[in-house]
Image: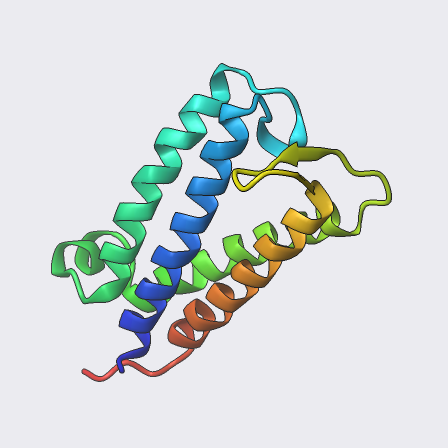
Length: 141
């Protein structure tokens, strides 16, 4: 399979998991980095959905208008890799934090931010590896 298509699928799965998780936390009043939900949280939910649609679209195949006027697909994947690495770093910090809050789960019970952070870290690193692989793979002409 083409590494860019694989990266697009991986980013889409990563995005869906993050978007659902973020939406769920926002519905429970938890905002960015575990703080209380504010109006900016709604902006991030809408923006996250836009990223979920646009980024896989740009990665999946060459877009002449995008590569001509903005970035090559490889450069775009490299920048995306850097942002995803930064995201992984922030999620790792949540997973390693000694004190942690918790949120109720849809299936009953509670999940700590640490446990959720570990799940999100695994998802992030898996997608990061696939996007990074595409970013540093030589594209066929």
